[in-house]
Image 1: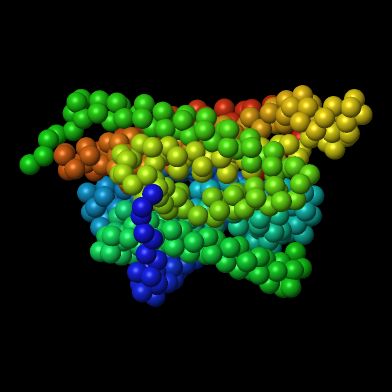
Image 2 (image 1 turned 90 degrees about the vertical axis):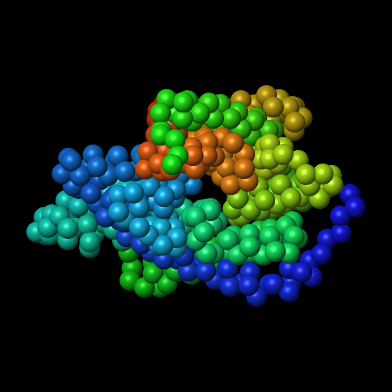
Length: 223
Length: 223
């Protein structure tokens, strides 16, 4: 092994890497928010909707969960324009991440809904609440609290898999690392440092999600 | 203009499936060895070993597979001073990646075995390795089957990422066929369908096994 590591090149470009990390965080945070909304709607449809809706949600979830994320991105970015829906790379990336997370998270949220004791729903019905009101006021909050740890892991997995969107030239940390290493020829060094940044982001997201849990479920209204 | 998408092109996609499966099986076999080691270290009575195993898991679960691929790909080149083809790098990276996830899954299975089983084995004056090998692991293996099958699905989908560094498997074959036929609207949905055909039965199998093991052992799986 007579390779000379040159990490100083990486430090020269470190601000650009940090900018990439910021873009990754933005993209992931938006996808998390949108994906969770989609997941809640799907979970409601799957557990309370009419039969065709249940079937449709089930189809969506199985389809997404049994195909690779990379292929989903390709379909959204390369195939959809043939149907006249042309998206920029970053919008396509956000859409792919949202659709992907929505499927995984809806199964998690549904597990939380199923863990709600039936007696609570009956009590709410006895008070004259409508279906959507029961979902909004009785079910969703404790359901999300129950499955929060699983949701957090899914969010972090999503942030990590966002590195794949660099293949459709969406701009984030991996894409920026790719272009930096191709102009400086210090491939190993750049990827090594970028990997470290991802690890830091994963730990950071975990801490942030823990803080959100505390703020929403412990500090805020009692669930 | 490009070729049309006909039988030959479809067969090209089909011929790439064995590479996807071979990579998945190879990574599962290699990752199984690594994972068993990690699981045992993670549950060992020695703190340093537990820390090492935890660090390994955190590292590989906290960074994107794509980054692990890049670091391995360029890392191997640095280490041996020659540029390998993608195959050794891809297999190494996916082995290490699977090792972390399988290790974490199997740790859970080992810890799900009641403490009393260890104590009973110790009363029979079995040494620590023998307690593990003859008493704990056979029982833990049973519980671990459904989540392991579930992980296999995740692994098969994630091998698509190998396409990014040029390893020709199903997704890369899809890219190549799109480049020659200019028909992403046809090619990528077919690729997705092929993945679905491989993964869906495995997902169903995992679900069925999980229900059966729940019934026989009464051990609740957490997600």
